Image 1 (cartoon, rainbow, N blue to C red):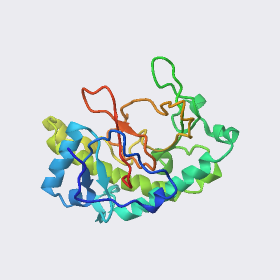
Image 2: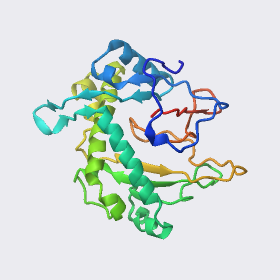
Image 3: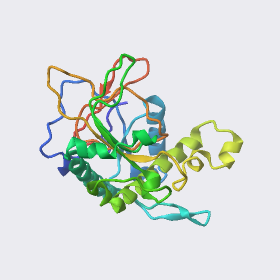
Image 4: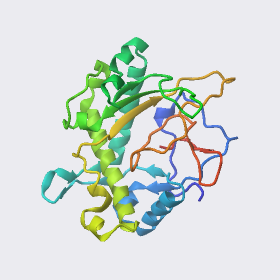
Length: 275
């Protein structure tokens, strides 16, 4: 399952000034899937996407030039299918990285004001070393900031946020809506091929369990792993499977790994301008 050369991705301006991906590490054999072809119900691309989901669970998604208008669903305006504009999504992503950089540059004491774990919520800030990665009690080497989908769509009471974060709610809403639409496209494809019960299919399959305006733990997550000493070579984030059904991930630096079944080590996800 080699890298696909059907839609090469040039390095984007976002990666200027960042170190290149090394050429001496094992890389994950991810397929590149065209979002536009999926939107056009291209059977071959759907087959490739299904194959990627079954065999590895990860794939590159080329969102460039992908476009579709909104379409009403069951006459419910709140549950209408969101228009997808891939190029606008990439602009949103660039802006989100800028917001993340601005927030992460704040003093640690200021950032910890937005750590709400004492309130029993997963959202807000998680500091460096606050997470445990394994049974040995190894602390992580990253910081998170989680923005609740329900907060941004006014489905729940808003959490306090620093001005660097709260000033960009329209940006978060745009990103959430488009990303959710992409996730539901994938969920629909999976629903059509998974051995669901007749009752589950009649109820709407996987998309019906992931309605945009239903309360959930859906989120935008910023993850920053500060540089480490070369001699340390510590893992920044422990091995895990996401708790979400479908995750859209945008990354700028190498280091992310995926592990194939029946293999003891992970392969690095090659960046090279890929998202």
